[in-house]
Length: 68
Image (cartoon, rainbow, N blue to C red; front, top):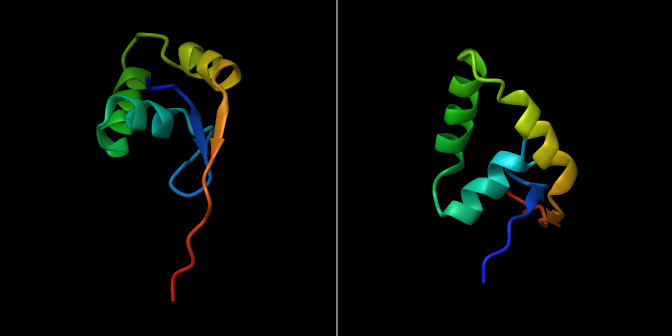
């Protein structure tokens, strides 16, 4: 069973909510971020659900990878 997590670490930006949603839905994180930006531009109050998810969703930490 899939679980919804915020993903902190490599690939996350603010709170890791978009990265967590993208992993849960098995889609690219860029698509989720673009949809969120579009939702902010429209009159729909998208920032409030984002902040609520940021507070409620548990955190899943990722290990940073080293590149040469």
